Image 1 (tube, one colour):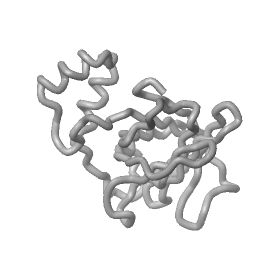
Image 2 (cartoon, rainbow, N blue to C red):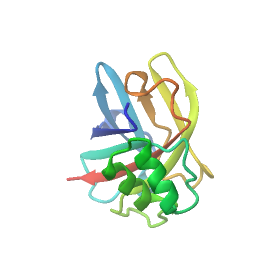
Image 3 (cartoon, one colour):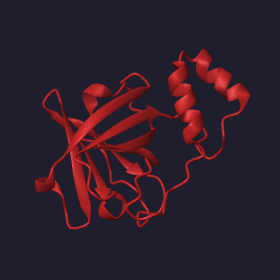
Length: 157
């Protein structure tokens, strides 16, 4: 994975649970899986989502970027669109509106590596998570794995 990876995921109702819906994308035979709580999914339920994962391991996600931090990101060879995306999304503010069609912006932290995927866990109280624990194929992650990712999920109709 460069510093950003985009996924286009299809709804998989057979893998959904009582409380969450699942979207996934096949990445070279390995599934990127993302569960989203039903309370956070707009109605009608979109058949597809776009999920963007941005490596924010070295960024303070609790404060707006300063001009010096923006310059440091450019100096680290981040493309301008990635820097703008990060700057727009932090500090992260959760959406509490049920069935909102607003994008989900969440930070996930490295949890554990499995054989073919790495599991990340949302930061914060699990009762208020806007998304479940994403499983990201190892093949699209750099080594070492990012310790934190900014996840942006948008609804595609």
